[in-house]
Amino acid sequence: MTIHIGAKPGEIAETVLMPGDPYRAKWAAEKFLKNPMCINEVRGMLGFTGTWNGNRVTIHGSGMGMPSLSIYANELISDYGAQTLIRIGSCGAMQPQVKLRDVILAMTSTTLSTPSRGIMRELNFAPCADWSLLHAAFKAAEAKGTPTHVGGIYSSDVFYDERPDLNEQMTRHGILGVEMEAAELYTLAARHNRRALAVLTVSDHLVTGEALPSEDRERSFGDMVEIALHAAFD
Image 1: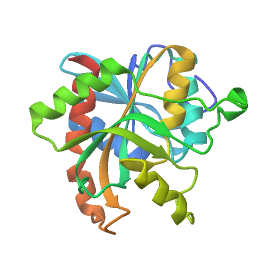
Image 2: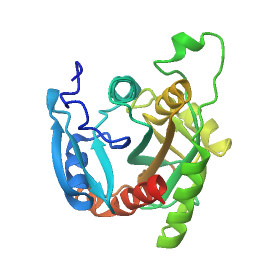
Image 3: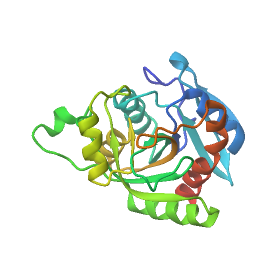
Image 4: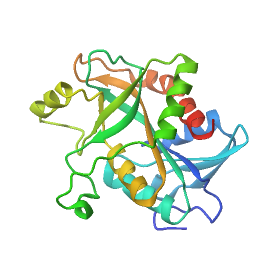
C-alpha cells in the first residue's frame, strides 16, 4: 500500500494499462478482463486486476497530465513491480491524414517540460517507446484492420493551449497528435528499465475542428485496448 494506491502486495500485475480517466479503467476492465477485482479507489482513482487470455493484467487510472501520471507510474514501478506500462487514451490529431477514430502508436513524445525536467537539467532527453511493444502493437493493429499511424506525438502541459504558433510548428514537423502524459511515462520507463508504450485513439482534430461526441468515444476505444493487450502478450 502506498500514499496513492491502496492495493495490497501481489494485487497489481506486472503488466499495467493506464487510461487517464478512472471510469475508463473500470469500463475497460469490465469489458476485456476476466474476473476483474477493484484493487484501488484511493482519491477516486480506480484500479482493477483480472486476466486476459490467461495473463494477469491491471488497468489503473493515471489522472490528467504528466504530474498525475508520474505519481502513479512511480508507485506502480517502485512499490508494486510493474514491468510493462501502456498508456491507453485519447488524443487530438495534428496531421490531415490522421482521421477521427484512428489509432496512433507513439514512437516518440516531444514536450516543453515534464516532472523529470529537474533531473535532466540542461539535457533535452528524447523519450521513446519500447520497440518490442511498438512492433507488436503495430502487428496487432494490422491484424485488426484498424487505421493506425506510427510516429511522434506531443505531450502538452496544458489542455487549454493558447499557443497556435507552437501547434503550427508541431504540425510542420510531422507530429501526429497531442495528449498530456506519454513523455513522462516514457522517461520513467527509461529510468527504471521498464517497457512503455502509448496507444492513442483520435477523439478530435486540431486541423479540421472535428470531434467525436462523448457517447461515441467509449465505443471507439475498444480497438485501442485490444491492441494494447495484444502488444503486451503476443
